[in-house]
Every structure is written in structure tokens, then in C-alpha cells.
Length: 275
Image (cartoon, rainbow, N blue to C red):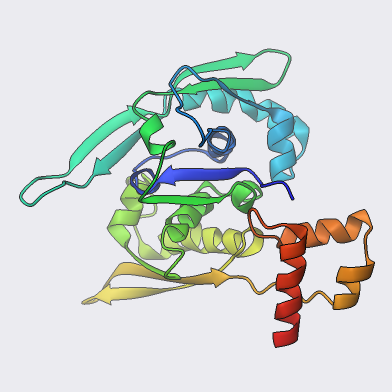
């Protein structure tokens, strides 16, 4: 089974402060998933994505993808990201770097295609990562229609091994670069948190619940509990006898990254016995 496109980001980039539109996120993530992990990558490499690619990934109409691609690509060139590196050693203060995502954007007129080069400063956060990084399948977020949902999903996947993450409210607002928007906790939950969690629960492999924690009378932290969705039961009969394209597509949706057909069938068989 072919390994699906994966997104790798350093944890410093996961927790960086920036704001991107949904289409800008899709362009970036589609290109990040193309970054090679088996060789040194320089800032000369061009990554390409088409409107057709984005439409297929997100399950949206190709006409909409075409109309949004050029605008989003040109806007992406101007986007900045603020990264904070924690100090190595006592007494040192964190280092803050403000840089751009891409150094070059090329829009191919008539082709509905964008080519981009990441900046030299950005590459260390995307390639040759050996520790303190987060990874997930591009398909996990491809159908989300909220940029906040994608960001929240990444922040949760950073703590995937624990299944719980508590985030300070002011810190989350800074990471999402909300500035003065949604100043009340009621509006913040209604327009940011609730839609993002709903999107994650609908489109990703995670099931998320959340609560809030107060310091005194003020809500200061959000607590997210999450874990993998329980896969739908697949009978032994369907696993052994159904070989048509529909059943294969259903099975592929349950596969973990890098899992072969045989490994998938064995795992689902064991789960059905436990149930």
C-alpha cells in the first residue's frame, strides 16, 4: 500500500504565531508534504501544486479552487510567521525570529498552478527533523474548511502520545494571531473553538472533547482530551471475500500510514475478536 503524503513540522513551527487563510494553509501543506526526507533540501527547490490537486484533496469544486488559487498564492508571499526558540541553558532568554514562509511565488497563468520556494530560514523547521517534531497525514486535514481547525489539530497531534493538552487561552490567541478579534470567551468559543473541534471530529482520525479551566473567576485555560476514533466494524467475511474497488476504498480509509493490506486486515480482525 502506498504511503500517503505526510506533513512534518518542527514543534517550534507548530507553536509559531501566524495567521493564514484556509486556501493559504492548503497550498502550504500540499507543498510541505512534498519535502523530501531522504536527502538534503536547499532553498532552490521549487514545489508545485495545482487547483486540481487542491480540489481533489479537499473534495471541493475545481472552479472554486481555480478562482481562489492565484489570490491566495499572492497573499501567501506577504505572510509572516513568528517563531520562538527556547533557550539552551539557564538564564538565557528565548530567541524570537520573524520570517516569511516563502521567498518566491510563481503563478502559472492558464494552468491553475502555483510554484513556490520556501525561505532559507524556514527549511530547518520542515526538513531533516530528528527530534521535537510533529507529523500527520495530509488527508487528516485536507477536507477541513476552517483554518483554525487545522491549527488546533496540529497542536493536538503534537501531544498525540498523551491524548490530552491544556493550552493557556492567551497563548492560543497569540498562536492564532487573533489580535483583538473575539475578545469575550463566549465569542471565542462560538467562532473559534467549537467550529474547530467539530471539523476535527468530522474530518480527522481524532475524536476530541474539551473543557475550560478558570483561575479565580476568569477562564484562563482550555483542556482538550482526544484519541483515535474507533474504526467501524468490518466482518471477516467482508475482509476475505469482497475484492471490488468499493470495499478496497473503505478499507484504505481505515489504514494507518505505511500499513500494508495484510497488516490492516490482521489488525481489524483482532479488533473484531475483541469486540
